[in-house]
Image (cartoon, rainbow, N blue to C red; front, side, top):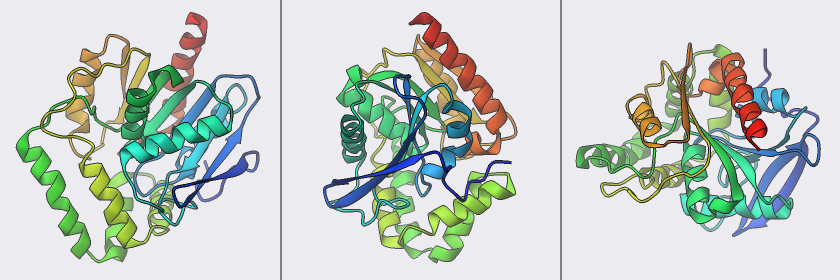
Length: 279
């Protein structure tokens, strides 16, 4: 069973100061191999990818981080937005001399990955999106209203109970729920509200119909993921992207890569192997 409460000992920690935030990130794996940059969901941190890092560090260069305002990357600094987070990750890649990477983003990390592609498509070799939705899609006025209406609700919700709800709703496995609770409680409530406000701006009524991902795209979500419109929108997204591969992860909720790491790693490994064969 994977330990999600500690950082794998073979990873090397780095800190990059950007806009008032000390960005903490970790690297491991052999130099000269393709890079997989893992980006966690809202309220989580780098440890949510422990099972993937441990599986892929033998054959790939791996990079995980705590996005600003999460984990050890506090204080939040000059502010939080998806654009700023995308620029943060590009700065991390620059600091490591990484010209191009496979981006693997879960939930919030999936939105950040899409923004990185929009900013600098030449830096993206391929993308793995877990439990997220397309920023190109135009969402209904009701969906946008419901998303924005959640902000004042979260402001009023007692934070201790709220973090327990996050843990229960994002995962099925007890050890993953324990991790999610511990990770969420690292974040001050005011910073969570700031982060969630940025999430509500990830999608809008207009979308970006011109945005297409001209890279291999692996789309994954848990079969019991009840967050937003992910289960509805991901298969539709896959149908619109000619280079997309789509899988449903069984016995998994929103943190699907943690609930069923064995299935997730098997799908990722086969997909990555095909990428390397294709060159």
